[in-house]
Length: 335
Image 1 (spheres, rainbow, N blue to C red):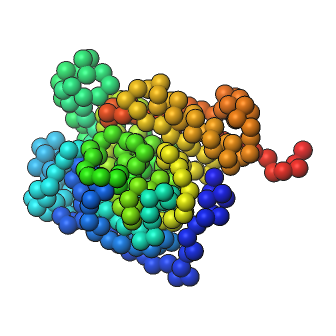
Image 2 (cartoon, one colour; image 1 turned 90 degrees about the horizontal axis):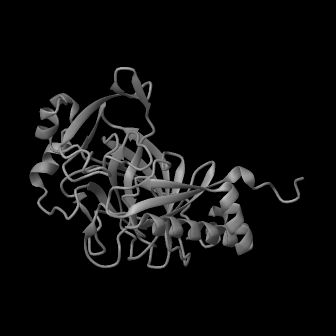
Image 3 (cartoon, rainbow, N blue to C red; image 1 turned 30 degrees about the vertical axis):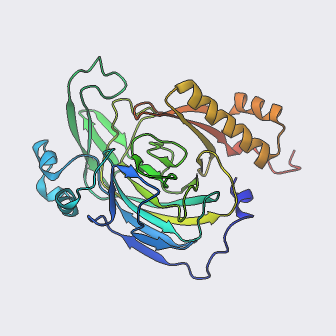
C-alpha cells in the first residue's frame, strides 16, 4: 500500500519541522470533529507534531472520588474542565485540529504514529446504565481504577491479573465535510476507531474531506480488547508523536492502516454484517490495486489468509478490520 501511495506524495521539505501541541482550553475540541473548525496549528507535509491528550476518566473531582490521588492528575486537566464551554455532542476531549497545509479533499493523509507515551500511572474502566454491549445484563454503573506500572508495562487489574500495556489512541481522525459530528461513531473520517493495532510504529491512512484535513487525536488507551464491550478500555492520558504526509489524488473510501506485519482495511456501520462487508470489499480492492491480484484471487486469498476482526461494538457504528499478513507475499521470482 505505501509503495503505491508514495508515487503521489507531496514533495517533502529537506528539513521537516517539529512542533509541540499541549492540551489547553484553546487547543482541544470537546466531543466533536468538524469541517468548520479553526486549526490550532498549521504544519506542512513531512512535519512532526507531539500532541498531549486527556483521558476520558472525567473531571479531577470525579477521578479523586473514585480513588485517584490529586498529585497523579495532570494539572492541565483542571483548566480544560473549568474553561471549555463548547462541548458535545460526544464526550471525547480531542487535541487539535492540526491543519496540514497541502491537504485537500480527495487526498489521503498518512499519519505515522512514531511514539506513544503513557503520561500517568493510572487508568480507568467503567460502564454505565444503558451503555455497553450488554446493557440489560448490567443495569447499573461501575468504575475501576487500574494502577499502571510504566516500567514493566503492566496494568494491575486485580489480584493475579496483570494486563500487558500496548498504548494507543482510541480516536485519531480528520474533519468530515460540513459541521460538527459526534466524536463517538467511527466512519470514513476515522475518528473513534478503537483499533488496538494502531500502536507506535504503525501508520494510518485517512481520506481527506476538507482543506487542511484537520487532524485530531485523543481517547488514550493503555490497553483494550477487541470489541471494547463495556464501552471503555484502560482509559488514560497519552502523548503521541505523529508525522503527517499528504498523498495527492489518492482516493480512498475508508481508512486503512499498516503495521510492521499486516495490511489493514476497515469498515463501519450500525450493522455488523455491513461493516464486515465494507472492510472485506476494501481489502479486496487493496489486493487488486496494490498486489495486482484478480478480483477472484483476491476474494479467495481473503478467505484463506485474512482475519476479519471486530474492532468495537459500542459506539453507534460498529467497526470491523481485516488483517492481511505481509509474510504471505514473497519476493517476485523467489521459489
